[in-house]
Figure: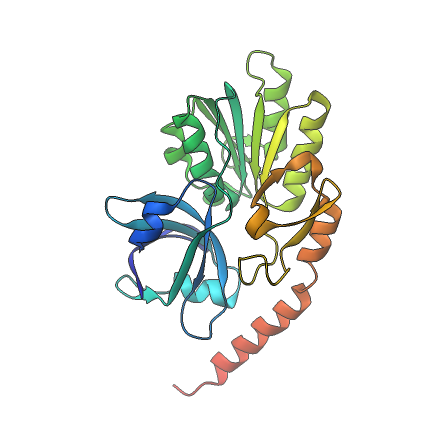
Length: 281
């Protein structure tokens, strides 16, 4: 059992959990993830390790409650625990000093961005962070990212916080400014957002790294669920990633695979809601 030491709400349906996992905390590197299971027989959920404290033996997970399984996890009270936490999995982020980098996060993707941006700053990079959301309540980790970023630019679709528009708007302005143009971009968020960012950076040849999280079951490259095409070759996000050269990713195929089980997932969630409604009190 992996005890939950804190459970904090960051935004609507977004929670930050600090979990007791000393071995993982000691071994974890930026960019790696874990697969968690709330109880025996529950769904296995891949989650990026947002932060780790080797001294206190804890890892931090930021979870968006979108399905029955993630809703169950974020509803778990402090003092209870997760049945399984397997990891750290995946390859660590390749960290070097590019000089000037931009870290772009959309919605809950900002949680994945946080450990990458922190590691890049610690390596001596000048980090400009761009984060966005539908509205102000959906923009997370602004203060935490400001602690090591040269500047944090915020966009919201409704204009309730920062500049009105998408994160691509702020990034485009950054690229067009010779004094602020980044040598590398790390982009984390919905697939359409990451695809748009790679189209934006490609004309200038700006290295662009995207962490990908397609459907995943075992996390060891066995099931093949997280298969994707990068540079015309088959890759598996769990063992070859999760980070890839954004300019080489086949986004059309990736989006098709992500939508494959959408209808089944909706039906499953409806069945779960029905069972919960009919269950005796």
